[in-house]
Image (tube, rainbow, N blue to C red; front, side, top):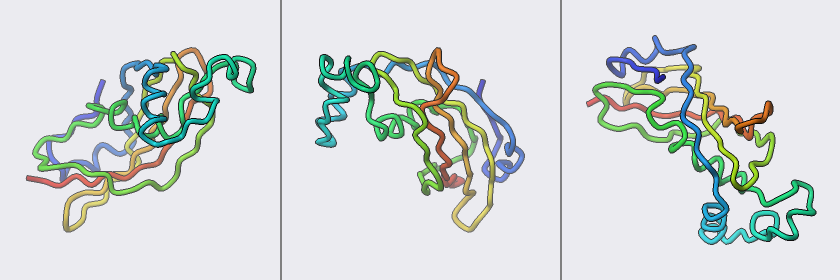
Length: 151
């Protein structure tokens, strides 16, 4: 279920609300593609045989891959009518709490923690937790800021 507001000016009414996304699989192919794009070919991400006897029991996603999936994982969780655009404004804090094993499913849980109207639009603070299916401990928690610009 998503959080929905009728306009940018009504975003402060969403503070305290939470929405949870759908499960999404992190495949080994996605991990390998991210490694190629970022040129981070560390064995913990790509060498299944070596990783099987390593500290995580298998290959894991890059932490930054999990972070980069926030737009996909949180897509549709906060819907605001009358928006010309919403852009990333920044990050206040990110913590990688547990690695995501290849083949795992993750989803986002997003809470609106602040909404500050300004000259360009409303800056919205979001606390997003990326959960791992079957695990009590999340993969990451990120405090992000998005700028919602009205039409």
